[in-house]
Image (cartoon, rainbow, N blue to C red):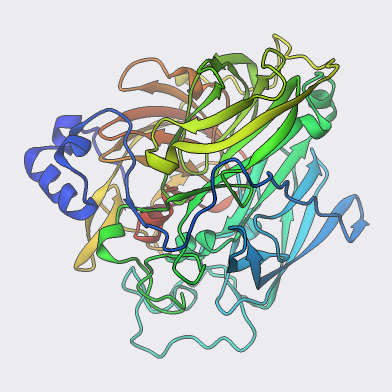
Amino acid sequence: MRERTMSRRQVLGIGGALGLMAVTGLSSAAALSRRPTTTGAKLRSAVPLPPTFTVPLPLPSVLRPVSTVDGADRYEITQRETVLEILPGVKTPLWTYNGTFPGPTIEARRDRPVIVTHHNELPVPTVVHLHGGRTPPESDGYPTDLVLPDGWQDPMPGMHGMHGMQMPAMSDPRAVVTRQTRDYTFPMAQRPAMLWYHDHRMDFTAPAIWRGLAGLHIIRDDAEESLGLPAGPRELPLAIMDRAFDDHGNLAYPALDPTLREQPGVHEPYLAGVLGDVILVNGAPWPVHEVDAARYRLRFLNTSNARHYELEAVTYDGRRLDLVQIGADQGLLAAPVTHQSLPMAPAERYDVVADFSGVPVGSLVTIVNRLGSGRTHDVMAFRVARRAADDSRVPTVLSNDLPSWNRSDAARVRDFSFRAGRMNGGHGWLIGGQPFNPTRTDVTVGLGDVEVWRLIADVQHPVHLHLAGFRVLSRGGKPPLPHDAGLKDTISLQPGESAEIITCFDGYRGRYLFHCHNAEHEDMGMMANIEIV
């Protein structure tokens, strides 16, 4: 799957741009601009929506292990349908982990293994992927390693999936399929970081996440806890997502097959991605949270299918608070980086410290999205409730264990294009001109090899690597941007943008993925296989 590097002019030539606009519904200005835009089409809710900053911010519950054996903590999670109140006074059916939205948080210790037993009581097959995990291939959540529900029968012969194959579990000879239950083993041999787990079933990832199948997984260690960062109630996980609701209070989603059993995909206007008009944080619409006039550690995660954000913290008088970034997708930075706004693509995480000590008691600090309009401009708010002592700090040195790969270490350089194309006679999203096929090996690398990957996009594509964290080397031939600091597993490519990343495949041998984390794009072919040998 090696391609020569293409210029932006070649990717977005006149004919290509016209075809791209036909697929994505983008205007010519959006298709040809380098300015961050939002790829996708918006659903509009049909129920009354609450005022902003009236619903309290919920904090996901922390799951307790059911046992500890040979130094490994074992957890149990049941995937099941439930009905919850997301909008005040409105009941919404959801697919959940343990009946909560988001699912329960698992808190792990570095190098202490975690085993999670998942029970599937949903009406469709599922797969669990620990996003950001350094995980053996048998537990990485490969899209055809299905957990079937009780009584599940494969569709009749002739029923074909998005990629022209009869049910992926039947067509992939390497698939490991279980019925009802599966154990996932996570060694936790990695840096402390905030990861997240979500469904990764082939062709149906987007609607499964939309319906609620996502939760947090946080890794900690003694070194991080010794830094004196804000902790306890002053450390807040904040999973941001957008959704829309129909006139019955159900989550609206334009699936071709609302049962999610046979026919994957979305209706034509939403091929570029599904956007909602309600912003949720930890499952609550535009919530508010009381804080002390002190430093807080805000651990942002974008769990939206397709929506990008550019976050700012704005005081009651229009002043922007500094967002001091201390961590990225894969854990702490070497040193803090101060921002006044943070762009965040689907699946990206930013670990920041905000200092509310200079904000008058009783006033609001709002988190806004500069890329949003109307009600999607607002995200959440903090109400400064009281003065309080604060002995936290942000050290000038945060970590000294970041990898120091250099270009000279690279065994090879690869080029990949991420762009719209034709797939089985319809629209799709392709890597290197090809749609995903679980039976094809796209990239073979040696265990321990360092590689440089050059990526180029037509529209917005958040590119995610399984197993391997990476560093951003450049964007458009220029140095990386301030928010590219640290070790990442997802990079946001803007329309027409190219970037270089460097990584080392030193985890495990086996089959892994890289893909676009616009969830509709990955369902429509934008995934590829890596074989580590």
